[in-house]
Image (cartoon, rainbow, N blue to C red; front, side):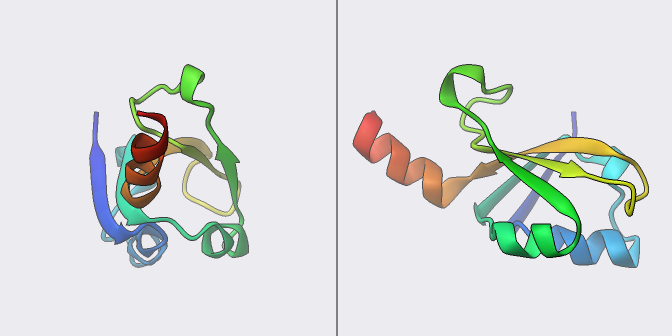
Length: 91
């Protein structure tokens, strides 16, 4: 399993464009924040993940990369800022 770490999740889009990272090599993205609008503007579908069906503990989103990318696949996202807030309220 390959995990990518970013402060802002959408920064991965630049890495993919510059081919310094490859989508095929990323299973999980861990970031402080994740701006859905930046992904959607790039043609990536953003889906919320319910806590009871998380593939990765703490994952709150699933990114679906479409035909405009090197491969069509899903990448799960752990957005740490949202996770901290959720844990403070839900436990």
